[in-house]
Length: 255
Length: 207
Image 1 (cartoon, chains in turn brown, orange):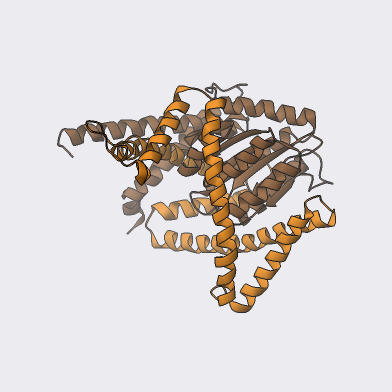
Image 2: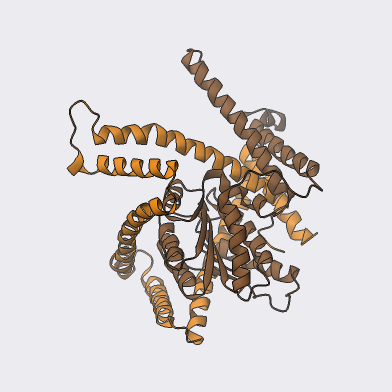
């Protein structure tokens, strides 16, 4: 298959759609540059997160960010990558706290990436002499050992808020319960459906579905975070239209 | 710009792998396969580093005489013992499987049992924490699906759909519809996350 044939194949059209998505993101990011605040609908969990970060800094308690156990080489890893962005932003916001944030993960690559991201924050805030001021830890390498390893961090290290963003299973309830027992704030979101059901029932501030991927926009991680939300909205409406047209055509016996 | 060389390498490799998934040209697909294989090798090394990190964290707790350092001691002993046994007998050796069957499985099974209790408690607590329409619908659905799944309640009342039928109705129509809607949102969010990394706006590789 030559390059032209490949580009007009279904796969090639898929790639074109991805580049259109990218183009929309860039256009909205450029158009929104210089605007101090994007119009984002209120998600109570993120409002509570801002308050929890402020309280943790004032009271000298620790923030705990947990990235789950999804590997970065498959689709499960994307919510962990969102968690990394969030961890980096939160580390910057809470850098002046007596107890800097700690990041736990249940997968080797995520563990290394969290340490690297946190070290770059340390350099950026002028703490190059203390590159390990923030801590990135691998708490376990199976779902339950990861949860069991994250519990002592919450129970023993004066954690006042836990942010769970990544790929989890139902074991996320164990972590949520530990936070609850400590009277701490918990925000949690995942790409996994079983975890989302558990999170909806057991966590103070659940974020459901695509709200996980909006986290960066709500903590002002950069203009492309807000513009990617707009691109997602456009594609979501397109998908809804395609599904409805498909359903109508099916009802009419055309398909 | 922060770490321009590592960003350029990551973006270039990311674009090649992305194109390799969509465009069926031998040069691109072969290149994509090689890069993905390299990625898996690096992920395996990262796994070892993860184990080392686990060791270092718990060793640090023992050295600092942390109040719960006995648990850390147990973790390190278990880690070393498993490493020796699996190193000597291989991952499918008798003693390696003994560790898996008689230590890991029971421990994870116990945690799963604990999870059941925690989830029931969490469902009850949901009413205290957030009394709204969605919480009520959530709990009613949970109760119906539980009753429909348990044989002891699988009794049909004349003229009304039985718990099993109600369960099937919930699981097969609204649950599947809702799940697909959420998964579409997750898919779009995943695309956006990947593209932000490709554009260099998110740099999980630090630099």
